[in-house]
Image (cartoon, rainbow, N blue to C red; front, top):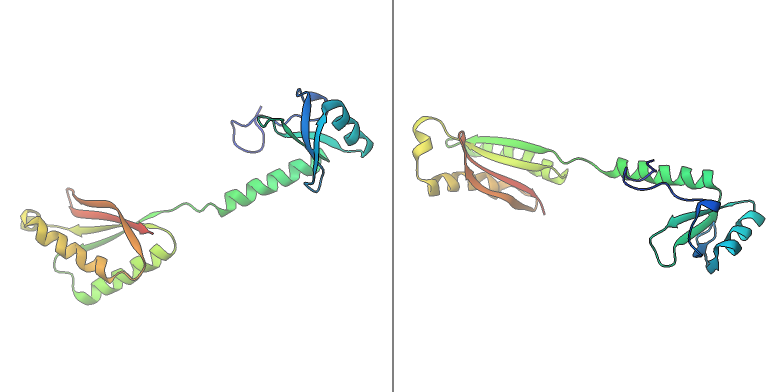
Length: 176
């Protein structure tokens, strides 16, 4: 018996399904009518040819609205669609450099990283190490990785500190 919001939300009660003795009642324009008994609120809704919908059952006293139930459901689904549409999944993008990557290539990769940060993505910056490079001084390797981080123009924070992995040294950055 799922409603419109999340799967955990119970379906809203309308008219005679409402169990509370008294309710804080809003009209269809969201104007506060005040605290009324359930009988008075139902009578008011029926006189206007509308429904009494319990919006917030956990409030004290519970909050109810006088409006057409079909219109209420339509507005709720529209609001939910808007929320889903606005939520954009952040993706983790990756940039890979090597110890000998030239300055121009680093600038190009930093420009790409800045663009991705502006779009709201996380970026995994990886210093790829092959052969003997894996056993170099970690301070030197961090300096090589910092070369590209200093070229990124967007404001960022390091969300995952430097980690040594099987392929090399990595760090993850995201927009501040």
